Image (tube, rainbow, N blue to C red; front, side):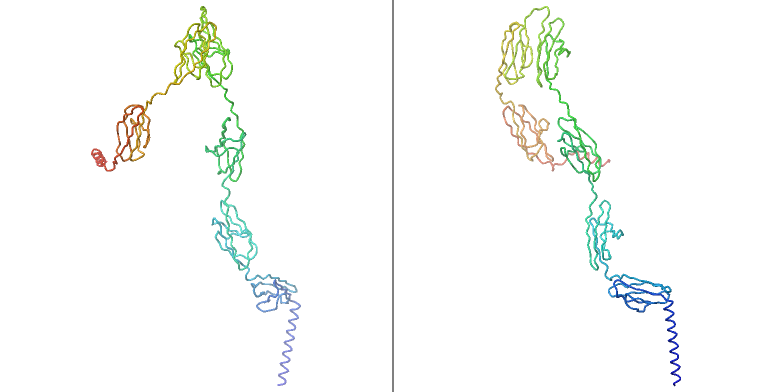
Length: 483
């Protein structure tokens, strides 16, 4: 028994020396592993065996190992490492918290916008996205809308909402129109807008712009409007030269067919009407076998000047005088010895002797006067025309009412209006017709007398219940039968 115990002790000592030998060999041939983590205090497992907590150092045989770090509340860290001979391997692990993610809900108006998170595509709105906690850049894109950008901070285990109101690209351009001078009416594509200076928004395209201003020539230009840009145009308007102030000169002669020369320029033969700018003129009237007639006249704007020339034969020695006419009304007509000579104001050269003068105007009593013309003398006739008393009423009145109202009225088949209606007519006998849809026509002769009022009450009969005439029924049946 004693010898057996000695043998066991000897065996144990031999095995211990063997283990010490191998440990010394590992210490001399193995490598060193240095493990640290953030946060510290993580459990270190190598090939599934616990070796301690970070930070720590351990010597290992030169081979490949499975390393695992664990800490409560964090995701485990796993890796494989190879330990070389007589070298140090350092491992630093950043542990991720188990709740490092949050939810992001993205909506947009309008929807179907593309979502990019940190330049990575995540689908179209509306969309729910799981993201790591921290700051992210969100970008939304949609055709014909401006890109939407937003920076958000995702918190762990929390929900974040984004509601984006997308703004469309500008669909209009601005047209800025000025003119010199200002205040010109602006027509764009034949539609009036405002007066210059003006600004307006228009859709992109080419427009016809027309500017009008009184006293200036109208100007038309084509202008292109671009989207989102301001198109400025300044137009210089050209002034219209004012028309010369003109008057009329009517020239008559006795005998007629005399040549008319005004300021050394021939204007034809009498009777003649000439339009001339306002001013003084020297008029000559010439005819073969007659002495020339000369006179200076002043032509006024929008006025009519009459010249009546009685030409004197060269061999005759007749003496002439001149009659000057005036009246309380301009435009009165003057006749001398039954011959029309012109309108007041008027000056006429006539042979010496007795002449009968008549001045008349519509609505006024005629003026008569005898004038004795002395040779080479001037004679003045001033007429005061008196208005004629208004005549008796020469017309009558027709008043028409009907049932139904708004019926059409025809006088001698000429449309006059709709009832109720009042018409003024000359005395006569007329055929009155009153018509209305779905009613029989009302006809009646009407005698209009001067100064009288005729009242007509037309009651039209509804024609909806009256059947069509037999010949129309036969024609309709024949048409359907042979069709």
